[in-house]
Length: 235
Figure 1 (cartoon, rainbow, N blue to C red):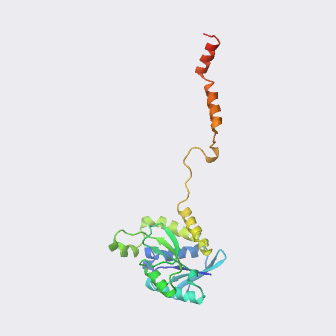
Figure 2 (figure 1 turned 180 degrees about the vertical axis):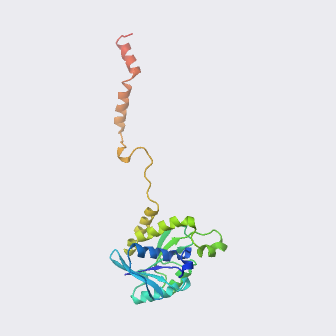
């Protein structure tokens, strides 16, 4: 069994904030994989489903970001789980928009939701870090994080959330490298070759055959005809 935790702030005025992309990711997983309807418990909205035969409890803490760890700690103790059974989805300021990375353990890197969870269950949980990009100026960070995604970012955001959800079974299988590689394939599909020859039509000729072809070509043609005429005494 695993806990999938989405981080964000409750309330409609926050729902499109970059800081709420963790909520968005869990919502898409729940929708895509037909989890149960939401119910309130452990100071969170929770629902249940199954991925790759593993029971998943998805939770979205309703305590505001800075107290997210309270809900996670309560749920973990209720099910007698360990930090290794907890997967947290959240926004990462230091990753470019469109990038996703998964890691186990580490520091909070200034993220108050991660800091709160660490204070309640320790640092050794899995983090799915969803890049929101850095505004480039420290003075603009607060407004960037607590601002809505730009209209121009929405198509890419939808693609990211869809990929996070469609490949979530690999998280349930603890196959994090496969999860990240599948995300990369979905986000940046391999482009077809722009060459005129298909790979199967390319023929490699051995050096001997090339020489034979050259000899055959040199034995024919206007110059060869003229030499034969001289040899035979033709004028």
